[in-house]
Length: 211
Image (cartoon, rainbow, N blue to C red; front, top):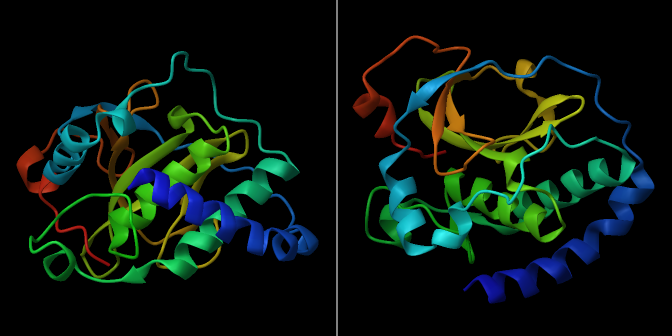
């Protein structure tokens, strides 16, 4: 499945690369990074994803600081974000997989975690370290569970989200941030600034990650 996705991604990204590059969208303003807290349980469907595709949950051989965001890296983010948002067809897991919550790399259909994991994969294929590509669990302004991709950069933590077309700093969203993957090891999850105190991990771990 991953080989199929990779070949499709190459063609899709190439198709939009010119328009994104010609747009030369300016680099984002610097913003403070998220404050991480203690270790916490991740979403239960994430662990099932890791069991099925363990190579997608392995840490980098070495972990450095956030990636330096230059024009090429910024173009990478915009191209991948656009391609994934425009090509995955939104569809609930119960329809696609017959279960309420199933994390996977998208082939055609998917909900929020598919967008996040597919963006993570495409950026890794472009040489980005997984330590800077962290799936994150939030709650929307309507109180719904949601997953997105946080990218650690020298200009702060940026959000790649299927609910909006533009990449923004995490401080520019209306979400309540709960937890995200650890930069040290993507199999480990950590609490975030908006919820630093200890909490009922079962409640957060089983949030319905739908759009």
